[in-house]
Image 1 (cartoon, rainbow, N blue to C red):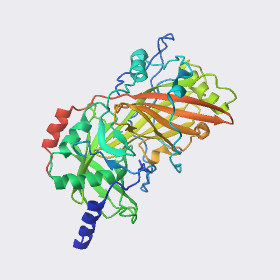
Image 2: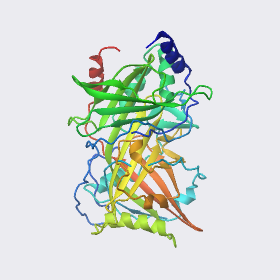
Image 3: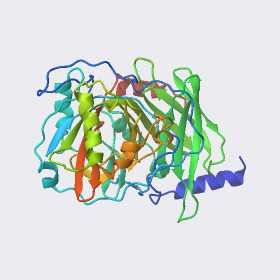
Amino acid sequence: MSFKTSLLSVAVLLTLSSCGKNKELKTSPDAKAPPATTQTQDDTKKSPPADTGDQAKPDDTKSDVKPVDKAPVKNDDRSADGGKKQSGRDTGRGQSAAEPKVPKAAPAPKAKDRTSDEPKVVPVKRVEVMRVQKQINDVDVTQPSEKTGGSENELLYTGAGSDGLLNEFKAKSAAVSSEQQRRNSNLAKAIVGARLTKSIGQDSIVDLAIDERIQGVGSIKNYRFKAQPAGNMLKLSSIAQSGNGNLEFQGGFLKCLDLNGQCATAYAKIKMSGAYTRVIFRKSVADTYFLTQQFVEDNLAFDVLKSYAENAQNGIQTSRKIDNVVVSSYEVTNGRASMGVAITTADKELIGLSVPLLVSNSGSAVDTGVAKVSDISKSYDLVSSAGYSSRISDSITDARLVANNGKGQLKVKLNFASGLNSGSIWLVMSTVEKKTMSVEQVRAFEATVKAF
């Protein structure tokens, strides 16, 4: 790289700020046991999901990375560094062409809107669902969630797990010089999308979308890195592509954290033009159930999804039922965090959601837009839309994130409008975390990594 280009790379990084748009890539908790029935139903066993959420898939990724969210992000100065009726079942599986814009924000739901219809419990069907249901039905909205250190429009980005990794990496980023913190913070705020893709017989791929606009000049650039085995980690190398920007890749690694040797939970440390960033990646099935509004009439779209959830819950032998739910997320230390959700049915319907992991400053309650994404695989390591119908997804008029405890437990409100008749279905889910390396083990690993 020429001296002139190097100076340009550093200049771009130093001037990156929170004016970037919040967009998802167009490339790519506490429930620890599978669900079962609730107090209102007899226990019914069911076969496990076909996809465990961390299996590799055939390589169908494309190098043209393009984020989907659009809101700017600020650094959180408070951080050192930067009725309803319940139905459903647990599911898992993941991937899904052009992504629509984030839906316009609907008025914040009033308390009475969420409680006017008395909920009627209909359970998720998997083992120990009563325990799982209590955990995700009682998402604690009084306690602060674990934050990444990034913010957007007075809301704060959160983590998606309970392993303590996020706080560990925030502490590390605060233990460097003020100048290095500034560089790292600028890079973190500029990352508007991230994806880790694991493909059968192929190297793992890390994609970053970085907003390099300075005072309105420039664009979002895409960077792709190949991860290849190197001792007890995967070494990253840059893959040249047309969408690359002006930042210079100066080293990095990917560390898989699953104790079973898989890579459903992992993190990448990357150095670009003198700045470091750490990004946590997670993928898993989700324990799920649905809460459905009562007394909804003459709303076919609402009735269809409601019937799919109830058929799954009741073990009806039909293809018209929810089959799997798999989630994939990323958390940028001192930056954004987002989760992709792929809901598939037995008759090949796909609902893809891109959920910004945001909360208010206190508690876990929130009201922010969720994007429906026609091909969720372009932003997350989830199932491709090829071979799936979007009929049910297209019938959802609006989606909102209404609760997020920062540990992979979320509640998303799906709205269905039909003339004067509207109805809502709430998707409540909890990621199924696998056993991973402890914070102490991660700390010991990093002590063995040579500086770069």
